Image (cartoon, rainbow, N blue to C red; front, side):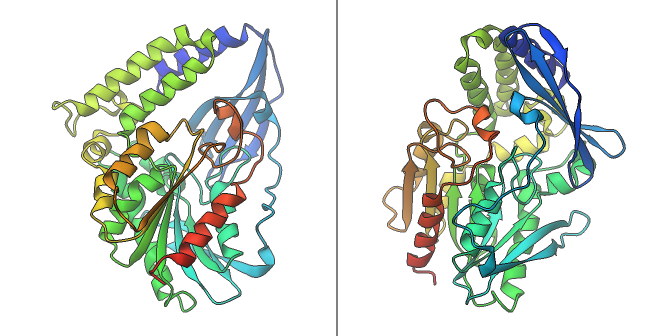
Length: 392
């Protein structure tokens, strides 16, 4: 988080919660692959929050976040969802060799004959193979749910997770660099592995992983089909503005304090669209602090239009309460581009959020903190689609 945004976020939180009344004892937890997260509970006159600071083993700050009070509690060990049966599959550690940016991952192999193989693609940010978000691991839920039903699954730590330190100041990094080498290596592993060599390989992308899935499929003709969960199709730089505005509007007390943040993000989004954007534009003048190379690549990428050119079946799943990838801004773009395609199936789950867990009312980040699991209906719909597609 850049300094001005951090200051504004801190000011906004104090305006909402009131003055700080006490600071609790910090809790330190490991944050693999090479870091530590320090959780500091902060009490305020009208509530409280948790300050989360993630640092490397050498003391470099990787992330700073304001979270709910519940986030100060120790993370409990992940428990499998009810639909997962670990007795029906085995897991193996793998390494996806991509030169200096190789990443570790997990191969889940069912004990029964393989029905199909699936490569999982996590969303935006520095995420591990399970897509760990608070106490939730949506990609692990999906992997275990599919493996329990006879599907082989590969999931892997993102390069931005494994090589976070090396990439912190990368100048020529793109969306392709973020996903394609590792995804291609995962596909190749499944093609060559004796247990999966004859199985069709599908891509399942969540959030930004779904956005990039058509690009990977276009480069990898062996991909049999796409499964897109909460896949963004609206330009990412404007999605960031939209999400920030949505969060500010959840609480009237934060709207005024959030206005400078939204204005700053809007100016940065405009720079992405500007003809003056060049490889030398400083990263701190652009959204997320990502280099200009990232935005020059991404602003010319229309995932829905590219998907329309692919002769592969596509399953699109969308949470109706999702504020990160929305029905109105994202799903409609997929629907328009893929209209008339008989090999495209779309389903919206009215009660589910961005992590495909249930709730009521307007969704908020606080929903991501309690331990939950991807809804079983989502797993069933994926397995049913894999069984009925003509590709295997």
